[in-house]
Length: 598
Image 1: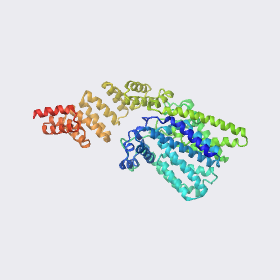
Image 2 (image 1 turned 60 degrees about the horizontal axis):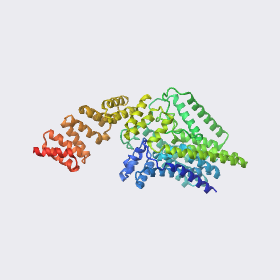
Image 3 (image 1 turned 60 degrees about the vertical axis):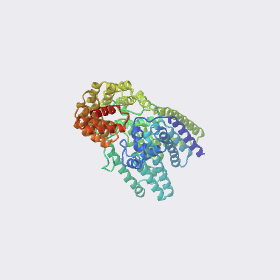
Image 4 (image 1 turned 90 degrees about the vertical axis):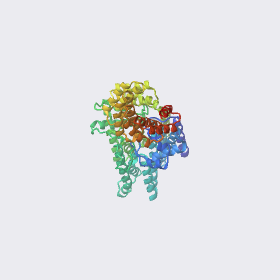
C-alpha cells in the first residue's frame, strides 16, 4: 500500500509545481547565478575551477553552482530546464520526507504519506523550488535528508560505513548551502527520538567530525557574508559586498526576529498573502504594537518544547527542536539583509512541525475508526488547499514584473519593492513606469542610493541630463563608494562638458578596476572630446592592449595620432579599424581625407 501512497504524493507535487515550468528567470539573483554568469552558461575546465573558488551572491556553494553548470551544459540557457530540475529535486525531497517520517514513526505509512504530502505541496515552498537561484535550497535539503536516513541506517546496523556515508552527505549538503551546518544537532535529536542516549560520550564523539566541519563552514559563511575572501582562500569577483549589518545590537532585533518566527508558525497553517519580500516597518526604532506578540510566541514555544523534553514526549520534542534548530540561524536577531523573514527559510524546517502534527493526529485516532477517517479527510482537504495555493503562487514567480507587483499588493509603500519594479522597467526601456516607481520610492522617504541612481539613469535616457546629474549627486552623497554611479554620471557629463566627465571616469576606474574594459574607453573618448590628445592616446593604448578587436578604439587612436602630428600612425590605425569593421563609415570618410592629404 505504501508504494501507492508514495507515488500519489510524488505525482501530486509534480503536477502542482508543473504550472511553473513556463516561468522565466527573475531579475533577483538569477542573473548573477545563471543568466549572466558565463562560468555557468559556458562551462570550461577553467570556469568550473573558478566555481569552486568563487562565492556567488555572498554564498559559497560550489556543488550548487556545479549543478547549475551541468544544467546549462545539457540544455542551454533557457530557464525551463533549470526550473524543471529544481522541481524534480523537490519531488525527490518529498519522497525523502516520506522515508524519514515513515522510519521515525516506526514504519507508519500514513504518517509518512501525509507528512510528505503537506510538506511537498505547501505554498511556502514555492520560493525555494521555482526560483532558479534557490537551487541551493532543494539541493542541500536533498543531501541533508539523505544524511538523516543514512544515520538512521547506521543506528540500526552499527556499521561504520553508514556513519562515513552520513558524513560525506553532510559535506555535500554544506557545499550546497551553508545552512546545512545544523545537521550535527539534528543527529543528536534523532538519537533522542529513537531512544538512543543522545549525550553519552560514545554518541557525542561520533558527532565530533561533523561539528568540526560545521564550525569551519559556519566561519567561512560569516566571513563571506561580511564581504571577505576567507583569508585569501577564495576569489571575490567584482567589488566586495556584504550582507551583515553594522548597526549595534539592539533589543528591537529580538522583537523582530521573534515576530518573524511567529509568522513562520502562522504561515504553516494559513499559507496566504505570500510575498517575495517582507519588509521591516518604515521606522525600525518604533516597534508596532502587534510585533510584541513575537517574543510572547517565541517564549511560549520554548516553554512547550521544554515541557515536551521534561515529560519525554519524544515526537513533540523532536519536531519542535528540529524546527527551531533548522530555522534559528536565519531569524533576524541580527541585522542581516533587509527582510523580516523569507518563505525559503521554511523549506527544510517545516518537516519539524508537520511530522509531530501528523503523527499526533494518527496516534490520537488509533483506537477510533471514525476519528481516524475524520482527521485523514481533514488533512486531505488542507492538502487540496495547499495544492491550489501552490498553483497560484508559482504564477507569482512567472516574471520579474509579476513577482514584484504581487509584493506591492501587500506592501504598497515599500521603497525596496518600488525600486526593484522601477529597475525592471528601466531595463525593459519602459521609462515612464520606471520613473513612476522610482519617484514613489522617493516619496516613501528612501535613503537607498540605488533609487537616486536609477532615477538618474531614467532621466539620462529620457534626454534630461541636468536632472540626471542632480540624482547622481544625491546618490553619491548617500554612498560615495559606488563606481557605477560615478560611471553613469560621467556618461551624462560627457554629453554636456566632456572635460568634467574625466574625473568621474577616473574615480570609477579606481573603485572598479575589474570594469576597466567598460570605463577606460569612455574616459579615453572624454579626453578626445576635450582635445586632450596625449591623455586620450595613452588610454586608447591601454584599451587596445585589452581589446585588440575594438574598431572604434583603433579609429579614435588614429584621430589622436593625427592631431598629434603622426599621420602615418593615424593612417595605420584607421585602416586597422576598417579591416575590423568594413562598414565603419566614419573611419572610411576619415581615411579618404587622410589619403587626400598625403
